[in-house]
Amino acid sequence: MNPEVPENILNSFDILLEVMIGYGLAHRENQSLRHKQEELRSEMEIAANVQQTLLGTKVPAVKGLDIGAISVPAKHMNGDYFHFVEDDNNCVSVAIADVIGKGIPAALCMSMIKYAMDSLPENRMMPSGILENLNRVVEQNVDPSMFITMFYGMFNPSTNILSYASAGHEPGFYYCAEDKRFMELSAKGLLLGVEKKTKYNSYQLPDHHACILFMLPWI
Image 1 (tube, one colour):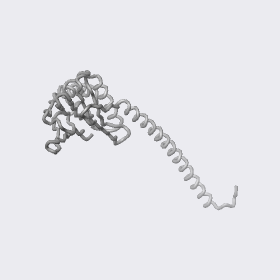
Image 2 (cartoon, rainbow, N blue to C red):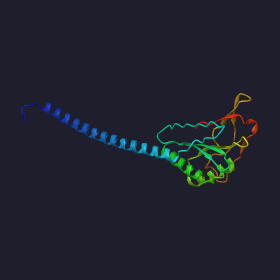
Image 3 (cartoon, rainbow, N blue to C red):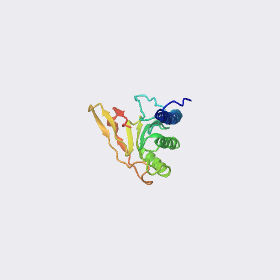
Image 4 (cartoon, rainbow, N blue to C red):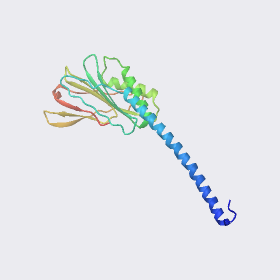
């Protein structure tokens, strides 16, 4: 268009054109990645809402007991889980579990645990039996690289006895008003999913510890 422009200036325009083309391609790729990121974020939010619905549990209202629970996920999808159960014997049970791992795989594993617990009979067995049943489910259906810790406690209001068992989970705590001190609910047990025929022990707090505040283990 302008033959009088020096050649060195024309060469600089060629370089500028190459830079602009490169910028345009990078911008297009950036926009595409941002769009995919928004799609993934939207899908994760939907999945998190579905998980909350699937893993939802009702806090029981029991005369003489003050029960509360909270769980804050580290990410959108939660690998932590707590569940309350009231059985035909008027016993109140709580299960607290944590998958070793986070994100979607952990959330899917927790959903499986929830449905495995729902399939147990209404007339519940002792905590050790609950863990043994769940352990068989986990061992058969969960990837060998994933393990689950769980604490299961069952309180009988008619006898004021708390029975509990643990599958490698952090200990619970109880507060004895008579002694004015906190104590650990120590219990030993192998993580769920390690060995199919694992046996678990049930422990008890007898009725002379009836005046207690039961605190959930950290999850």
